[in-house]
Length: 559
Image (cartoon, rainbow, N blue to C red):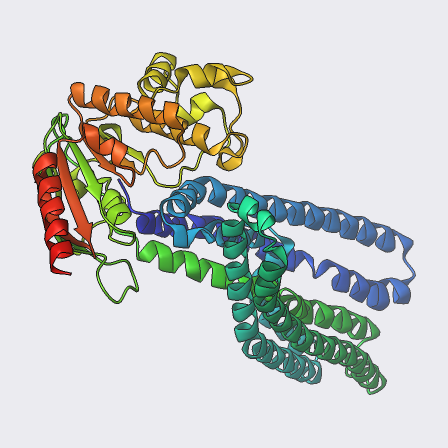
């Protein structure tokens, strides 16, 4: 498999060909722009002096045909840019979606991608293809008369300086505004998953105020940048219009001196307007260009940091032997590790219970067992192979995971149990039965075809947890990782959960369950006590419980 970085590099190489084609169309478009000044030149210097209506007719027909070709080529160029934008979406969107789904901090990546794609397909790109032809028009102005060429060159230099000033004055502001808006969008996305808590405790005003401050700051940056850009754009228009008046005045003076014809004067004015138009348009489109450039830089940074994905050798189907060897893990930015030298083993057909106080590292341990995170030291092994050495699809089929906070996705109950893939009805029903959720699902409005809603909002917390358990059991995984699976279950649901764990054990799966309620401990074979990220006790359940009870009694007797 190719890495996201190599996909982006390949797209860059392939897109160059399309942009070269756009450049070719731009060449002919800029040549055809000369039709109007040439037509005016001929009218003033040939038709009006000769009085030949036939010449006027033929010149007009030729000019109309050329202008028609210009319009057709302009349409083709716009069509081509739109197709490039669509092609980029087709080639890159899956990589962006994959990256956004796999890493929480990259949730805003799709927005960056859309900004690049929309700019590439917009008319704002055209001035950047037309600008390289400005020297050609300046040369033509020089050929008409050196003074006209000097005036046009001076105007072009002033506009280029204004463009650079615009870049320098607005770039930081637009960057800061974009980062601020991205942070607010990420916070809103997080808040949207907790709307019930927000409404129940009337947190809306406080959150709106908290998010409003960075949003206001971002808007202030945008306003300041827009103000500066507006002043520069106004100055640009003043310069261009003044120069157009100036070139007519200078042309008239040269006509009076006999150094230029009237047709040359009119043609020079039109050519100058065309020469300066791309620069002025580029300044107007600069905000979009800056945003797209920064978004592309962000995409490039993320993809360049992506590790190359390699084809993994498909290992024999796992049996479920789980071993941790001196595992140490610290999240990015953490000052101290969450897990410190954790070691244990669980065999197929064994149930390992993990207990400990809050913030002991239990949920982090679950993430390591499923391959969601990788340790900084030590190894997490499945059937002797490090978890990162397994093919990702093969590992996903072998491991079932029920997180502490169950999130379902927009789709039916069947879709969610089948992990949003192509659903095998028999396997879906089997997983639901094993999870003790089949009867519950049948009581829903449309049974397995009931919509869960975004985040599972159309279902209760207990229903979401049981469907999440069925999802974890889908496909009969050999390793089952359950993080507080009974936190939202009633007594009936808890009895069903115990039966599920025992059945998974009987099927030969290694079951690892984080527990706060002692009821689950009655079905575990091994018990691991975590405290402050380290193993305080590990072994057979009864042996560990006796040791803990003895330690507690000793502590009470000495106090």
